[in-house]
Image (cartoon, helix red, strand yellow):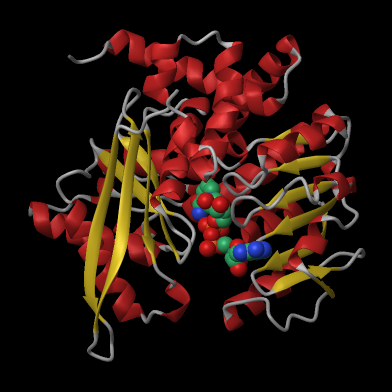
Length: 419
Ligand code: NAD
């Protein structure tokens, strides 16, 4: 039983979702075993010099989970809570995310256990360059293509790309995505994850005969994903009644001024002190009255403790793994529809794929073209997932995994196992 060692881990929870769908597909034990083991887990030490002159050593990870459909693809996280277990779970999710929206990529993820909030730009640059240098042999446009995640930015991707290019002695923009547009980034990439979340929400609401313009929305997390999601909901005509970040939650049933919140967070690097809503705790925010709830911070936010008190009709998972499996069952019993992370937040990796294509072609698209292609690629695949859920009377999450696993298994069988 390959899963026993992981039972109390993020990766263990991730496997629980996989197993449900694998049973539905009647997947044989051998194929299950292959798909519940990462292809490669890499741990590197990152010695670097603080601005004070002191030397420190951080730990970095890269997990290349599966290559059946193409090069590994997935972000790099800079956060104090990064562990090999978490990075493995995130790489596992990337495998299914890339497959469910039909991208020619496998799954990967990376991370450095560090707190970017206490590091200067110079320190971040030195950590990033050393991390990239340690990985030079195993990454590349046809091997493994990193991108930003929690705590990493387009500037960090620029340093990563430059370091790789210096080592291989040629400019290689396609080694990472999420770069600044000036260095081969794609127009629309910064907004892509939030845009995809709002598009999935509007599409699912229409299916439930609800007009997005009549809805109240709560967004947890106000980083890249959360702030853009809130902004696009406002553009679609919804009322954003709650937002939060690590400093706490802010709720106003009449609607939050999202533009003002974005400007405030940009200026103060946090929402701490934002006066545009009543102050509530992060956990209370999730339980406030709303129609749509978007958890867009970190894992494990919706648990057995709070799932029963959630008032939303629809949850669209912006973060990866925000709902624990036991909580998912409570939501289902209460009739709350969940659009799962692997499809809801796939907008980012879809536009990352477009960026990789543009870098390889050396031909760059207009933002309107990026957004139109994003909508088509995301919603066509979401509709296939919803159709399977309807036919088999299963939750959207199980259907999304089933579509993804089926695609990876087909590729695996056609390739065969290299002896
Ligand atoms: P980010 O670092 O830009 O933002 C994270 C936000 O969450 C910050 O506002 C932080 O203050 C807040 N936060 C942290 N702990 C919190 C808590 N307990 N309660 C409320 N807020 C809290 O990161 P991001 O890129 O926006 O990523 C957010 C999530 O979305 C992660 O799960 C990430 O894996 C996922 N994701 C990101 C992308 C992308 O393109 N950036 C794509 C797909 C999925």
